[in-house]
Each structure stands twice: as structure tokens, then as C-alpha cells.
Amino acid sequence: MKRVSRYVGVLVAAVLGMGILSAQAASQPPHEVVSQSVDQLMSKLDNNQDRYRNHPDELKSVVEQNIDPIVDWRYASASVMGKYFQAASPEQRSRFARVFKQTLIDTYAQGLVTFDYKDVRVLDNNQNQRYEDQASVDMEVIATSGERYPVSYTLRDRDGNWKVINVVVNGINLGLTFRNQFDQAMRANNRDFDAVINGWSPDVDLEEGDGDNQKAQG
Image (cartoon, rainbow, N blue to C red; front, top):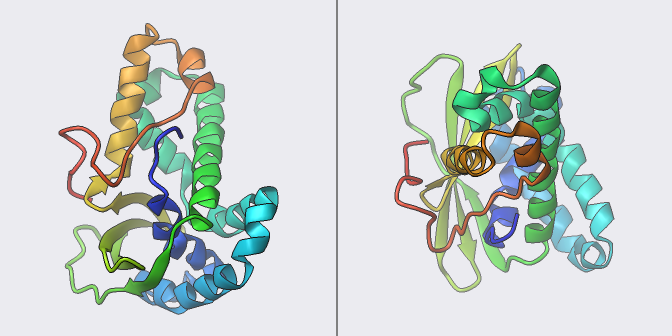
């Protein structure tokens, strides 16, 4: 990603943390899974930031190991492709899912060692679930400057396991942002899937907002 804010890394820390307890995810509510795992991951990062700065590939491996089991990449990438999904071949769908996953992992890994944060808090979530198989987990990241950044994860129950399918960071709906950018890329490339997939590099600035239609409901 070209212009994704450094805040993405630490704001996604709760998602990575859920990977630590992914084995218990089937028997625990999503809010409880996140709450128990955030502190563990933050402690691990605090103790190893210098090492990870000097060994970025090692950090990417740690990120992938933690995030892969608890993100529904197929669902999320299909949502980003939006109305173009049905027209894509099975190979193109799979390839975009892999590219989409790798761009996020690379970005999150970079952000995790560059963001100066003071605290990461899982908030009490009293929202009524819109669907039985979906839930939201809200968090707040407090920077060393005292600024507060809200983050909300949407999770989907897939075969008894809660999987992340979307994230809203600082009011910016990342799923919707990426879907709009995929649409723009398809239009710019005469609906050439291969060109869009090969050149996929989504662009979002979480500090300033990105476009007029990105602050949608999570």
C-alpha cells in the first residue's frame, strides 16, 4: 500500500492477538477472545520492537502466523471485488485473495514497529447483533500524544469459528474503501482482471480520511 497510515499496524493488533487464542475462538464470544489476547500480543511487540525493526521479514512471518487463522480472506477479498467477483475466473479470484492478503500483511508489519502508542483497550460492547452469525468488537488505541483512535472489527461465524471480515479504523471503512478502489482500477484498466490484480496497491490515508464515501457503517 502506498499511503496507508502507520496507525494501521497497531490498530490491527487486536486482530493479530486473536490468533494467539484462535483455538478457543469456537467456544468463546468474540469480545472475550479479543480481550484476553490483546495484552499478550502488545507485550510481545513491546519487548521485540528493536529486533523486528532490524528483521522485517521475521515480523512479517509473525504477523502472518497470527492473522491468517482468524481472517476470512476468501470472504473479504470477494467483498472487495464486489460486482466483479462473478465475472472473474476461479484462478483470478484465488490469486486476488493471495495478493490482497500479502499487501495487508506487509502494511500491518510495517505499522506495528513504527506507531508510538500508549495503550490499546477493548471496549465493552453492548451493541445488538444485526445477524446471529456476525458480531462487532470495538477498541480504542491511545497514542503517546494522547490522541484516541477508534477501531471496530466485524466478525463472521464460519463453521463455529469467528473470523474477521472487515475493519473500520478512525471512521474509515476499509472494506468499502478497497472495494471502491478495486472498482476504479477495473474501470481504468478496461475491466482487465489480470492488470488490476498484478498492480493491486490500495491507497488509504487513515489520518485524513479517504474520499467522501468511505465513512460508512461497519
